[in-house]
Length: 294
Image: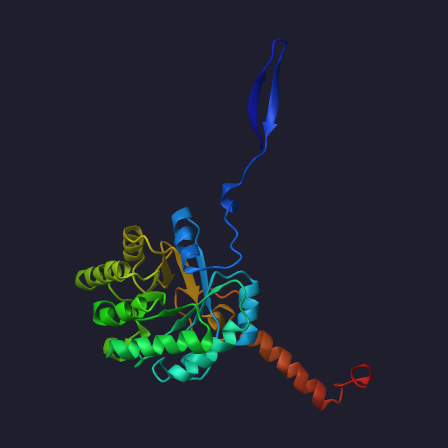
């Protein structure tokens, strides 16, 4: 329904329609997403979309769909290599996946996980690992799990001019310490530590923070305290953005059913049906037919 303005003249009163503006779609268009873009999105109240990708073909699709951030996650250890945890994946393997993704991407910011063992114990080793990822893959930023315990590693990487994203809450590289993938920071002491770590990571210079599997109320509190964007996975609707593993979103990992996951397709069944149809066509000598040969 248009808004109406009043125009007065000596003879009559006229109504002049003004164009209605839908503020919900009045968003800045980013030709190339940068760490600065994410800060702006938070300031303007625009939610940030983030998805994983580990190979060229998938990354090309994800980037074309205008996802803001592509995470080359160490979750490749699970969905690409079949490991039970993220721990086995190596730095060389992460660089391989990141290089494949970078070749496909034109718009999204590409963030790469530093894998387990490449940064925790030695800040110098952390810097070497981050430099290798940036130089050899062409990535735009790195992500590290943890708070005060990795402070020196974060400081050293940032001092080299490499953008860093933090990760708090459920940190999968510490799964054997936790013993379970249950929701973290439900108790007051752990919640307070998480808030302290979040503020610390912001002070150190991190440009963003992943909050994994924590209560939504805590996500809200952290997001309101920080000027940098928070990205939730199982952290509820109050985060400044959301991230999912693309294989989960597409329904390729049918056995994984956490509460926070919304499936937008069921590719496990659809791909299985398509492949079965191909097998049947080959067996019946229906493929290739006369039109599919030279």
